[in-house]
Length: 291
Image (cartoon, rainbow, N blue to C red; front, side):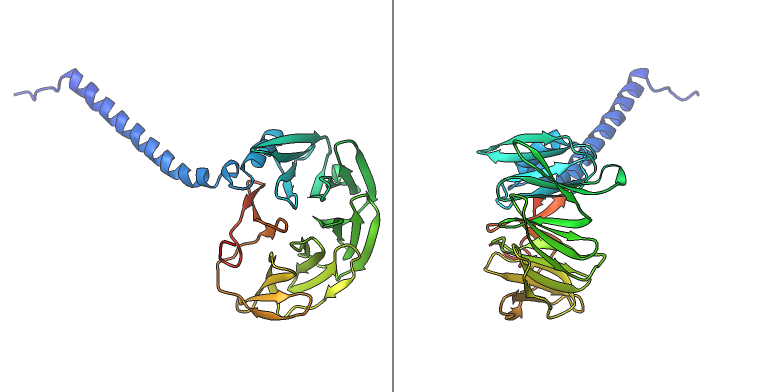
């Protein structure tokens, strides 16, 4: 006997069932695999969500960002433009400037956006962008730039530190040893600036660049300013021990153990900030608590 052939409609039903199962499986995979991304999306960040949506609209392809010390404004840049977004209520308002080759940026307390522009890989120029004008402040070899209570501080490749007021006047100059990994960070109140990297920590008055502290209690692997007074959290390289130090008096105590990632304090009220998709996102407190 010849075997009975399955009717054509049964084959069709079987193929449709297989296709539906494959589609359902792909949908479930895409949904579950997308949840972590959606949860950590810059546009859903509790602090910078609206600002990030604004910046992404203005500068879809970014090469860097900076945050204002009030955490209500931020700027981002691409190879040919800079955009700043300011939170007004629950919405963000934007402003855009055509500036090429931006490598660094900072926002001063008056809302001016300072950038280092190096078009075509040539000479770098310090520029302040505001609502009314674009002002150049001369050539610079800056490798880092931060905002302070009175203006900005630059760290140049040579190790030279320069403090500049929001009005553009130089208010202090100092020197630190040149180092490949040196970077700047500003205290909660904006009156101190720390130079860290290569295991060292040096703290200066942010306006005059007068030294405040030039040594660290250990070989420093991580550094975070805390909200309290002029205290900072250090993570020692040898054993990952955390130390809270008062940079004025040198008094120190052991910090509680906690997972810590690179981040910086945005201003007197925080939050701590880390990059996500080259936009600012709220980072965990390095002390391991909600403060």
